[in-house]
Image 1 (cartoon, rainbow, N blue to C red):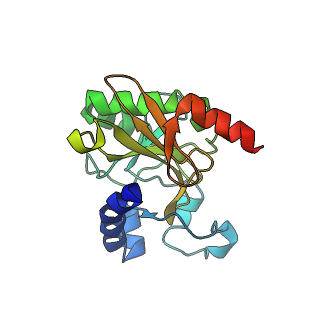
Image 2 (cartoon, helix red, strand yellow):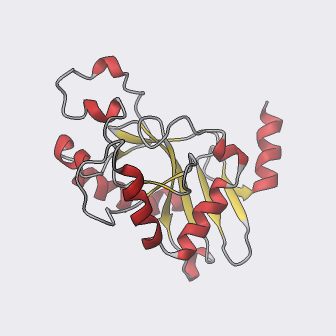
Image 3 (cartoon, helix red, strand yellow):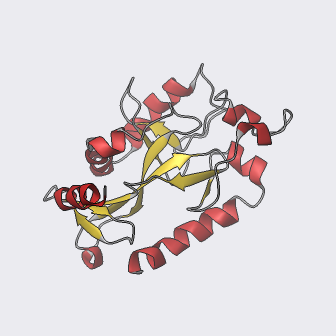
Amino acid sequence: MDYINQKIPYILLLLISCQHKPDNLAKGYPLVTDSGSIKKESAVSIDSSDRAYYEDRLFYPTIIRLYKNERAFIFTDSVYIETADLDSTNREQYYDKVRPLISKDERKVHEIAWSIDEVKEQQSGDGGLYTVCTWIVERPDQTNHFFYTVDIKRNYVDRLGTVMPIKALKINLKTKEILVADMDWTFHPLKKWRKLKNDEK
């Protein structure tokens, strides 16, 4: 419950920023929520202002490709560089400009997260609809024993949804220790989590 309580400010901030959905979505702030069903494309009207995001004709500037030519993406808390609408003609150049602005330590955290097979296996997008991305929601301090907390999210355009079964990680850059959240948000070492997951089958 402590982890969930710590996440409340992030969720409230994004809920406030997304009250006027079309304008804020265009700026790269999809709503973050762990609930709700997948919105089917047929539910979006042809003239909807966010239709282009569902059809992967436009892309959010807060979802960044971590490695060139690979389908590993990260979600950033804010837009690093103001940009025109991102589409297939300019988004890779935008990613190339943003990547160097992300701190070296945070890049390493994302790289560790994307080195986990269970994270890579969830990917079903390429920067747009259904793209899985890693999001640093908590940074190290003495109270969390110097762990980064990383949520694994999927882009549904109108929201970022929780990925199952691997929904969140805690990563210690110094020790390279990786903890994974179970269904009850209890964090276990990666090997133990895999064993528990296999035992549930």
